[in-house]
Length: 367
Ligand code: KG4
Ligand code: ZN
Image (cartoon, rainbow, N blue to C red; front, side):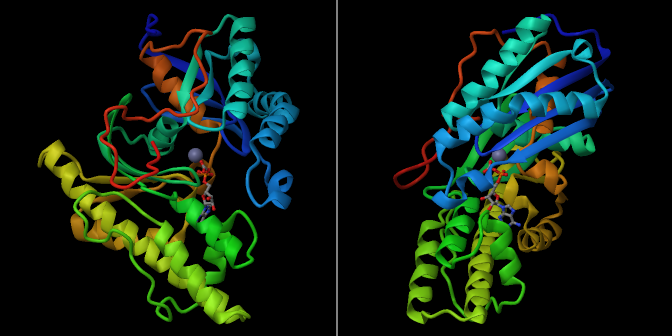
């Protein structure tokens, strides 16, 4: 719903709460009247230990773990920021997409604080928060092309403005981070799998195995990683027992194939974005989500952006993985535009950024 926008030039101080998956996070962010942002605190507690023995995130355990620590994290975020609760301009919480139990914990907490303090409440789309983070970190404003690569999502989005997103591509099976996590699991590496696979790949030869580059050359910039993961599993099964060098080479081969495919898909999306935005639009590629921390991805995209005349923008790792600062920032951007939510705003486990996007090819498409 729309509320009167705060006076132009007013500094907004927003608390952000993130509980959509297996990270509990709270942060305080300030948006100055000129639109620039500053992180005053950013507290994250990962739940990997709670889920480790199950080999993946268990929704019920995640929701309980959020309940157990969220109040303390919020207090810590305010204390570290040196901000009194009374001084907050608004409360933002992730409303979706994500695991419903965790979303409800964050939403109820955020709404309660908003009600108690008579402050505006902002129900934030987690993907929008990833999409807008470069506004906080480097003042970059839309339009830009966004590659969002995390454990739950792999999307290419044309970001035309705050609240204006066009999905150009998505994955037809696994998310990229998920493919890293599953590959790590099948090779006996630690979770989260992305950093473990990247570390192992450093000592590996990426040319020893010729893994498939899924969907490479296809016109639509969609993604697929399930076939690649299966190819890695087959090769690994042939080689059992695996030496340390085998594991390193399998990791390097998987990573190179995945990243080559990503660079190819991004190249396609660049062509579409240029067509839709027109020749005068700035050529900018933004990467967000946990996999943005991967150096091999960065190297592949560096080559691509140079060839295509783009600038490359990747937030620092702590703001690429799930965090509360990005939620607070998206809240501040919305609040500055007078767009706030009622206390009846629902949690939305499925909440695509572009509700009009046509389905991708294949079955099991993720929104
Ligand atoms: O954005 P994020 O923190 O949480 C989600 O919203 O999913 O992303 C977590 C994902 C995990 O799948 C993790 O394995 C992956 O990001 N990841 C990486 C790296 N660091 C984290 N994948 C590849 N290379 C990395 N260095
Ligand atoms: Zn995320």
